[in-house]
Amino acid sequence: MSSPELDIVEFLLTAAIYTETRDLDERDLPPKYRRVFWEDGEVERPLTTTTNTAAAATGVDRPWEAVSGLMFTDRDDFSGKIEFSDRGMAESWFLERASHDRLRANPTLAHAFGEDAGVDYEDAREKNRPIHADRVWIDSLLEEMFDEDEEEMLDLVEIRAPEEIEMTLEDLVLTTDQENEIHKVVKAIEHRDYLAEIGLREIGKLLFVGPPGTGKTSVARALAQDLDLPFVEVKLSMITSQYLGETAKNVDKTFEIAKRLSPCILFMDEFDFVAKTRSSDEHAAIKRAVNTLLKSIDEISLIQDDVLLIGATNHPNQLDAAAWRRFDEIVNFPKPDGQMRADILRIVTRRMEIDGFDPDALASATEGLTGSDLRLVLREAVLDALTEERTTLTQQDLLDAVEGFEERDNLKNMDMIDGDAETLVAGGSDGHAHDHDH
Image 1: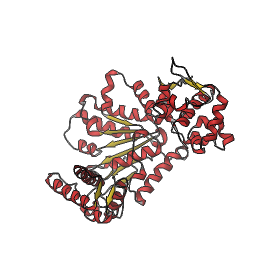
Image 2: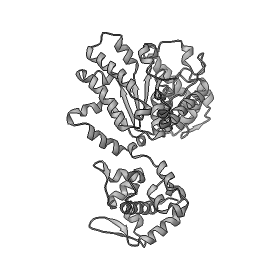
Image 3: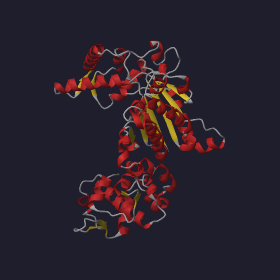
Image 4: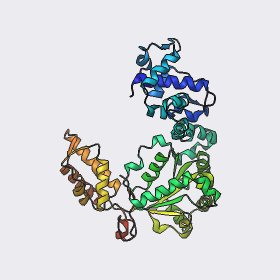
């Protein structure tokens, strides 16, 4: 059961209990409450429950109107503070209406009422998103790390909190091979202490390889969302070109950010830039930066630093041995085969209304397209239908969009990725099948 009045009463109870229980810390507050009360790198007691903080924490536009009819609530008209006139009555009212799932999602309330309600406090705390994954915590750390003269560094690195990543692994088409790789990574993260104890430290550096649009970035982001880890993304061509005299410093700072945000995922796109730079006549400052990068990769560890490093490249043929040997797992991202394209289409269209939808037939008509291409096709079909004031699509709309996409694609004068085309399709001659963005 959920209602505006129940949401507000939960918020008021949580704030009151947290304020008076010194054994509780930020990890015991639901993330939506932490965000409201976080200030100067911490949550300070007492937690002040005003109409503004209640609205921000619960999403209820008029919090006082939601609870003004209850016998145990009161508001100070001058300060806007909402509080209980009878705490015991409020607790009884709430517990009669709150589900076990609501209590499990709030460690503060699980601590106070869990024993009587059959909810385990430690389990609730474990399942609560950790503080290091919150946007407010990330921002406070970055403010601490960078002064005004160094703020341009943040233009080179994109940092996402898990709450800002909409895609999950369930939104992706994953083959058995891909699921196995992800499962191994998850287990390595869960058992870092054991791996360190047995001396297995060279683990947790993955290289995603495949053409553009096949899901390398999406899988890395979705993994961060599912594991509640901050996601640090950097494009190597930017970090080694925008500020030529500061390139090595920028590389060092990137790894410092990842280590300070740990546990986190550090995603380095365009990794082929490393080998391309090493084999060219690039500026000496850039070459120094690349050497610094390779050394930093050697020194960072999932086991020691709690940083999962994922590199990505569209051009594996440009990587040299020095780049390849930095990674303990290589994950191939070929273009999807017919069955994968059909599965991608089913997932992407699950909230669309399509008359006569036949994903298998559409998959047959989209040979060679990536998951990203399929999204573009569907986007065009939706927009074309909207020009006719329609929100219900037809199979023919989708087929027409495919034809239009191919016509536009033929106008582009882009080089195809080097390599045998047979090996660039899932289920091809290499015997491996992998995941795809959609």
